[in-house]
Image (cartoon, rainbow, N blue to C red; front, side, top):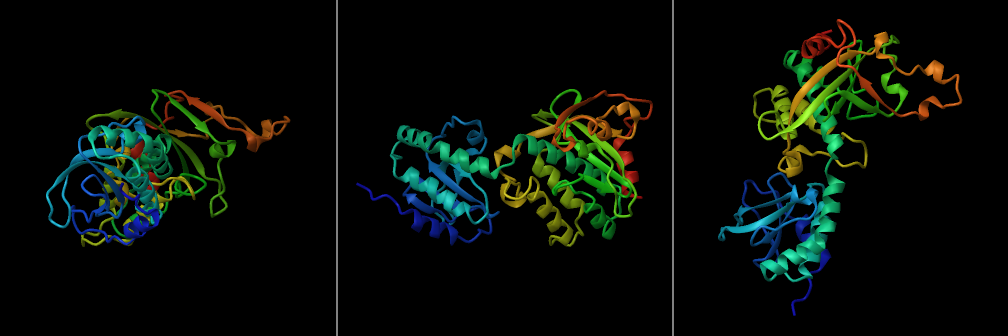
Length: 352
């Protein structure tokens, strides 16, 4: 009987792997010719289960399970395998080792046995992916905010102007999503046909004081997004587009590009799942393309917005900061609200 592989030994081997220069893998065999682990050229850990395609019960796991032909770095023959792609952070060496070790303790000798063993370990795989990947709601929100950032960057000149515009995006940190000159923008996205969005509190739709002690002119940017098979953009493509706008055409990654990627990786807050572009751009969960079905930029100061008034709420026994609510805004409030061309308006704010 084969002796089960030591988790500690495998974890140390995976942690010591060097990032390959190309697509070929330096494969660590857990079960020879049946189960292996490696690292991608983006530094992400991956597990290979050799043989025919595997079927996942979890939609999340299915979205991150890829069957293809792969090539080992040592020049051995290519092999067919299902690949589970994990993250690039250091702790994913231990996660990959745990999954591979659990699989190695089971029977992976035949296609039927491999599928049965995969089914048994799949809950661990799902947990690892769920802890690493952004939620569907967070992906929608990030895509919407990056569309606004793209419009602002396109409106500003290259170099220092775009570096300053990049800092107008605050959605990766607590507080307002964008601060452009004297304007604040709160960005929301929905898969629905109407501008109906959830807010965590009254403060999200209240003008705040800017650094110059003046009140911001607050706007609500409402996006409708639709999953599409063709057209639109997926998250990695949108990030690549933004990176190109921050390029200096010298080949090497600029400080502004590095800063953008760090801001995106921080989206969602400390300890939350994140999108690490270089390591996760190939994750199937991020390959969904989205087309914009509507984009409405509302002036929140318009009385037709009919928002909760903090002063009135304070006259009740309700604690204002305890409130969360949904807002359903008509597609047309007044002749100039929402604005006719949201991109042109964002451009004007970015140039102030």
